[in-house]
Length: 339
Image (cartoon, rainbow, N blue to C red; front, side):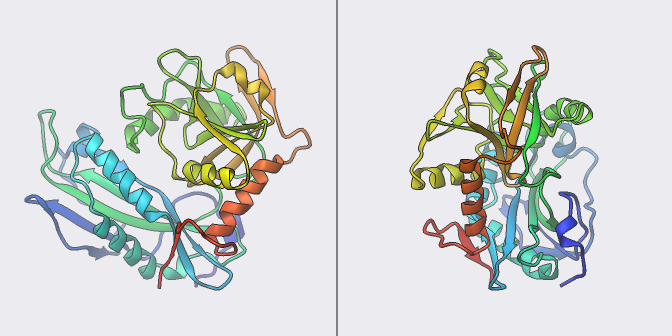
C-alpha cells in the first residue's frame, strides 16, 4: 500500500499504475489490454470528438475492516453503460468484459485501495468512446472501452456535512426526450456553467428544474435529489434525470427501515414541507442539504436546524456505508469481494 494522506484526499484524478482497454473492431470486442499510459491515441475525426459518442460510469471499491476488497453493484453499472450505449448508438460492452475489466484494474492497482477507516475509497471510471472516423453525422464503426482507477475522498469537500445548493432556473441540464437518462458527457457539459456559477456564489451545487415547465425538481448536476417528510423518502420521477444506483439502493434501505418511498414529481413549492433533503450519487454517497436558495426569487428553504444531518439521512448513510465496507450484512447481494 502506498503512503498517502488518505483522510485528506479530494475527489479528483489520482495517477495510478495501470488501466485496461478493449477495442471494438469488425463487429466484435477484442481482448483486454493492460496499459501504463495515461493517454489514448484517437483519430481526429473520431465520433467522440465531433458527435458526442461518449458514455462513462463511476463506481467504488472499498477495503473493509477485514482487509477484503469489495466492489459495489458493478452489474448495475454495466447495465447502465449498456443503456447509454444504446441511447447514442454505440457498441454495447457485455457483462463479462465489464466485470473482467473491473477485476483486472483493481488487482493491478491494489496498493491504491485506501485503508479501512479513512473514509476514502478507490473510484473506478469505465469509459466508452466512438473512435472510428466520421465526417457525416452517423455512428462510428469502432469503439474503445477502458477503465482507470484512483483513490478519492468525498465528492463535496464537506463530506457528510450539510451543504447549500442553488436552484438555477436559467439553465437546463437535459430535455425530457433527450439524453438526461443516459450517463453521457453532454449532460455534464450542459451543467458546467450553472455549477461553476453556484460554486462562485458559495454553493456546493446547482439544482436543476424540469426543462419543459420549470415547475419540478430534476436533479443536481452531479447527484440525484431526495427529500424526507412524514416517514417518507421522496425522490423525483422524471424522464430527464440519470437513474442513480445510489438512489436505487437508498430506496431499498428506506423501505427496510420502515419508510414509505415515493418516486414522483416534486414541485418547487413543496421544498418548504420537507424535514430533510439531500443529494445522492456514487461520488457523493449522501450529501445532506442545509439550505436551498432559489436564485431568482431569493426564497430560501432551510433544513438541518442544528447544523447536522437529519436522523433519517444519517441512518441511511450509515447503513449504506456499513454494507459497502462489509461492517453490516448485505442481504441484497450488492457487494462482491475481489479475491
